[in-house]
Length: 116
Image 1 (cartoon, helix red, strand yellow):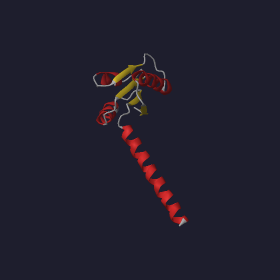
Image 2: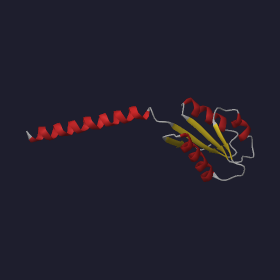
Image 3: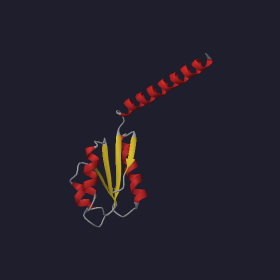
Image 4: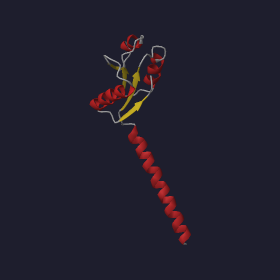
């Protein structure tokens, strides 16, 4: 009988765990998500990447052009994104921080980073 009681407790615990995961999953649908992409000289790939990210419908898509010397900026200017343009090359870390600051300003719950 004690084995059954233990088995029942384990089953009960597993059910509770599944319900918690299920509830968390439902709550995830209400979270605002920003994708942050630092970009430096990514003219050959940035449009395709941005288009693919937009298909996932993030709340915000923030791209930081890190003073690219190719056509990255020109490609990004006409896209439906939040574009931050560094006036000088600050590097990946500083560009990410700028994107994080913007995401916080916009009140997002989750930030996902991708390389340009």
